[in-house]
Image (tube, rainbow, N blue to C red; front, side):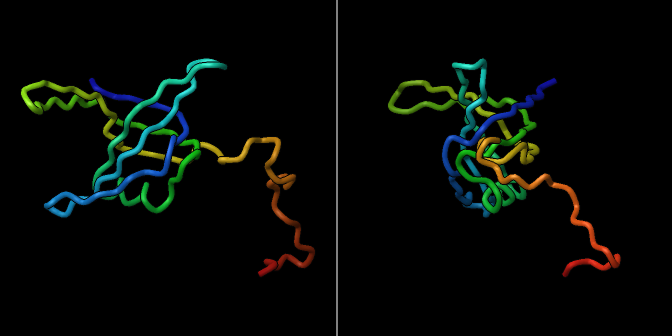
Length: 121
C-alpha cells in the first residue's frame, strides 16, 4: 500500500501548467514540522480537478492537510540519470489560517443571537 498523509505549510504559491493533452497540473512544496526547530520539505504534484482546486484556493503560507501517494520519477539527461520522489496529491484540505493564533481576530466564532428569530441579512 502506498499512502501518505502530511500536514504542512505551502512554501510558495503553487505553479500551474497544462499538459499538451489539456490536463491541469499544479506543483508546489510544503514544509512539515519535524520538531520545534526542524522541518522537512516535500514536493507535491496535483492533476485535473485537484490542481484546479489548488489553483483557486491555496497560497504561500497556508496550512494544509494532504493525502496522496509517493511517486518516483526517473529520467536521463546528457547521459546522467536523475531521480525525484514526489507526493501525488489525491486530497487537500485547509488545516488552519495563515495568521498565528495571537494575531487572529478576537471573534469567538459563536453565532450572533437574533432576538426576533430573523437572520441579520
